[in-house]
Length: 108
Image (tube, rainbow, N blue to C red):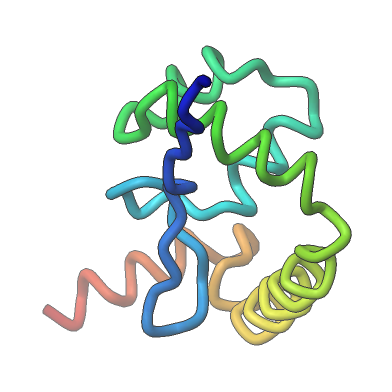
């Protein structure tokens, strides 16, 4: 009789409720977004060197199997991202960037 081998999914929820992959700071949503755009696990590993290739495969497999359970999480993360972008839209806008940088330099 064969023994079942079960590895833990390399996901950890941080204090902000964000899933991180393996022991990295890379979020689950970044990995899934790259995968959904067509990136292979190997390409994702090249783009995020702090990730281990086996962890990427496991996380993608978990996402494919449990996508419906993760839908609320992904929607929440997308709303948070939109809110952050809107809140900092002017600050991060390239329009007037040169002037803001020069003003910051003069204030030193």
